[in-house]
Image (cartoon, rainbow, N blue to C red; front, side):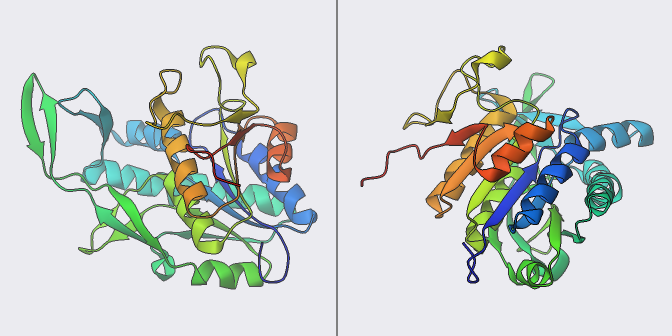
Length: 281
């Protein structure tokens, strides 16, 4: 709750191909019309992949010795990601909001020093059956948020539309995960609710069956759940960070359906994420 008593919602628009910007922005417009303040955060993995293919820029994954994978954000990948965030995804969201009659402003994590990050160090990866050290990866993790610029925009009646990249302590511009950005922004602003919109109806008991959506989900204490994988695992980690930082309500919901997205912003529908460990009354 903000100082003037209005609700503040941080919404993350998923970067996968299934999430519809028009659906997300219609839900944001409905929340704004209802008196809420909203910050919209986005990534752009699908657009980055399409743009990289057009520009003949290879996007690669790193495979760690333990078998886990992550994006290899070398200089070429960073260029494709930056172009996608600021040249394709953000304009589409801003345009859709304007069509809904919502004043907005698109910014990146670099503007006003909004997002500060820690750059990942050298990493071991398996390439051609050999373990090598990768030193050119330009990715990192959110270290802090300077929310002043967001408060200025919100006070002016604007919806901030926020994306990576962030600035690392060594002066390097780095790729940071948008779900974690949304969680960090929600904590920094004292948001009432964090809504993570994705190409699924919520957290599924069986990830292969869309009919198994859960009303609530509490991750096991060790964080390991064989039913959860890929991007959903990252969302749930971001959700736990938001809850630990004081955000009272975190929802994972469908970014493909107007009614589902609108209900999630209103606090119903989707899957409400609970803290890993139940809080004592």
